[in-house]
Image 1: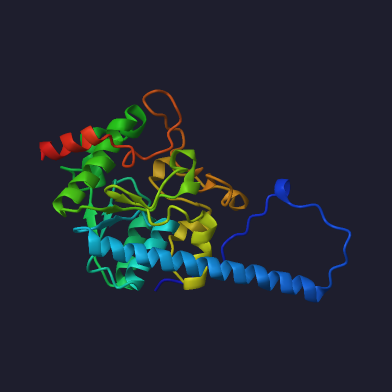
Image 2: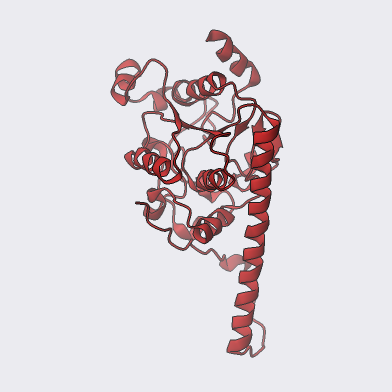
Length: 284
């Protein structure tokens, strides 16, 4: 079975801590302050969950064949739990992309959450390859270093577009949030054919919710990984830094660059030009 989640780490930056006041606060007053803060946290989570469930129901009611793509990281686990809680797993399909470069723990966890929630994910991998060995034989073992855009296209973009097309979806639900970094800082929940139901959540919100609701989460989070992607480009991050702005993804895309030489910060599926998506569909 899936063990219950551990309490989330707490982050308090010394740079922003208020200086102590020359007051003598009693233990009772300190305890009262602690409880008031806890009440604020509970109220915030209750509001966030209510809005999340409402948005997911709107997605199921107002759009044809909505699909949720999961990488099984913390935010995705929150969304999956909410889809189940709303009773929508029969109306919102769950799509999982196996790049053939994932951690073994990711594939094992996918099996576990399928059993836990009682559903089967739609699994897609690189076209024309039935295994990691076939991918390596066809494209080599260093494609992600030699041509990262081609690697993204083969291992992520093409499987995604194929999955969305084959399932005739009119709405793609994903776990992007504003606090992921400046590239996503202006996200809205509803974004044409995309839906970002956690757009206004923070990473800390996700973990508070996971803890409060007993949501199953990826085992590699306990091993120091705030976000989990491909094995070759994912590193651990000091847990004291997890809740700083943009730090959830600080361990992703390590030693990888875009074609223009800039540091890679996106996996490719969220930066597909509309023309490329159209060409991909016409090639089918």
